[in-house]
Amino acid sequence: MQGNDNTGLFVIFGIIFLVIGFLLYWYRDYLPIGGGGSRKKTDVDAEIEELLDKIRQLARSHDYQKASLNVWAAFKVSASGFLGMEREPNQTARQFGISLMQFDGITQETVEPLYGLFEAARYGRDTISLQKFNAGLTGLHRFLQIAKQISIVMASGKQVEEGEIEDIEEFSEATA
Image 1 (cartoon, rainbow, N blue to C red):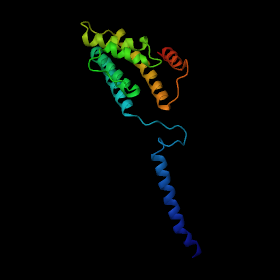
Image 2 (image 1 turned 30 degrees about the vertical axis):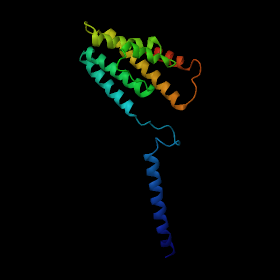
Image 3 (image 1 turned 90 degrees about the vertical axis):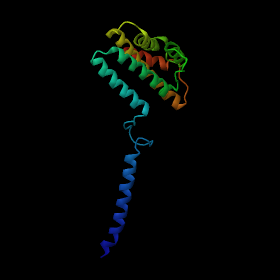
Image 4 (image 1 turned 135 degrees about the horizontal axis):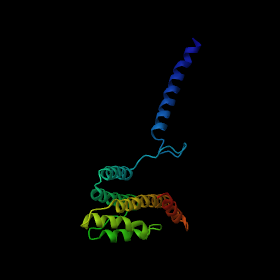
């Protein structure tokens, strides 16, 4: 009979371990423990991913006009979500792109292909060529890399070291 006295204790400890294990599994992305599991996607990441899927579909069907407008939409979402910059109603696309250059690492070469593509798609008479579309899409990917890095730096509260963002630009140019 002595062995049966511990059965209840084992059951209670088993339940406690299961509950703790479940909670650790459920909140693993929010706890500062464990080895870098996958980060949960934010709404901004999900919206950008959805726009990139639309861009891919439109580009496959050679509708570069609509795909270019979606490139601009992804650019605006990323500027708003990662950098906190909204386009003012009276601001042109060019002015919006230039206003983003206040962030260290975002240069004229980063934003010019994006607002150039948008202006051509929205206001131009000619159709968008594959070459112009690819330049804008490459610009979007470069901007996304830089904006995410700036967002991480801003969230950490640390000061940007001299040359840190330039290293990111060099990397994104090398991989483009």
